Amino acid sequence: MSALPGSFEGTAVTGLDSSPVEPAAPDLPLLTEQHEAEARELMARYPQARSALLPMLHLVQSVQGYVSPEGVGFCARLLGLTKAEVGAVATFYTMYKRHPTGRHLVSVCTNTLCAVLGGQRIYDAVSADLGVGHDQTAADGSVTLEHAECLAACDYAPVVTVDYEFYDQQDVDSARELVAALRRGEKPPPTRGAPLTDFRGVSRQLAGLSQFTDAAAAQAAVDGPSAGAPTLIGVRLAAERGEQAPAMDAGGRPDTDAGTPAPEAPSSGGTGAERAGDATVAAAGNPAEKSGAEQVHTDAPEPAGRQPAERGHEGTDTPPTGTTGGTNSSVEREV
Figure 1 (cartoon, rainbow, N blue to C red):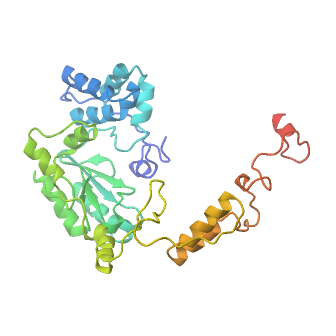
Figure 2: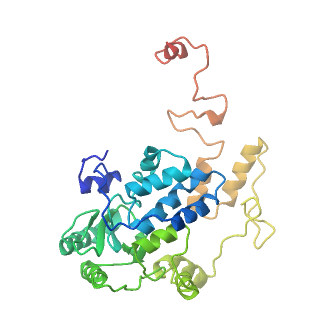
Figure 3: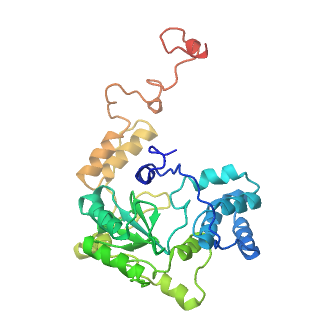
């Protein structure tokens, strides 16, 4: 159940939808023998067939535009699961839609950084233009609109995605024009990622099956831009300054035989854990790293009120068996 049953805004916040699944439309595409063969191909990729449920749900969406009651039964039958088990998964993840979607899915990030930089204003403007709210579809069937909690692109905020392709650093005017173009049947190129297709096409891609009918289109998707200046600024600055990460050995530790040797740790005797802690502190490359290494060193004093079990016999998270005193004694818990 969502926090606000039947509320689109409540669904946006909780990710759970308590509204009923709509009856299938008369023109809903059927799941055919070809789709069953593709589903079995997906099942064969996993040691346990039921592990294919997620891609199979994307397959259903690629055909019907959402996870329909028929689609739930389709997956349940092939995987030997109950409809309740399939439905529990389909209603848990927000990428599985419970209502027919438009030709394109427009997601507007309204999480912290995007909201501060105008994400909510973008959402409100697009919502007004379309005449719909969260998880609703425009009357012409062109666009389904949704809030997005986070699109993992804070360095490009505010961000809008169309069918999960990125349109970075948007403002109200650019986002409104983007949606208007989609409604005209156009497919503006994303800032990053593959050329735009549509929601059903990208659902097929998410299922692990190619949505492209020819090699050229598939190659164009692979060759699409994948990173922009904000993502690469750290690499650029490192190159300008002649900086590089230290070489690592097979165990993920700095390789003292490659390049500049790491500073030697003073010998402290003691246990192997203590010597390892000394070495980590000595190898710290800046004050922040050194401070962190010192805090987790075995010699570091334990903060007041904490005695973790991993520090040995001085503390434990498990009361000794046979303790009879105190309000949390094992005897009282058993009773």
